[in-house]
Length: 124
Image (cartoon, rainbow, N blue to C red; front, side, top):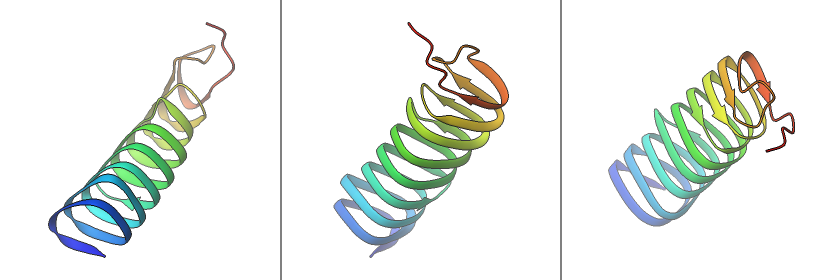
């Protein structure tokens, strides 16, 4: 467990909670933070801002920014070029399914769509 206002760790397994938690390599388990930053996150992340290179699991926040999302992002703004599923007001990705008020997928036949969008196999 990594509680505190500010936490910096190489790896976290279990539960982390605080204002700012920075994990150099990976976090596994439940992260309940205002701001989470990690190279890899496996599990559930609940926070205002979640920044991950790779996420496998569930990320719930106001803003979710990821390079690879192998799971579910629920937030006001979700950005993950490589994505499986996003649910939010604004979603941006190049793959996966998006449900929200406005969705952008550069590889879709219609890149900007309201309510739902997905990778339709557009050839470059």
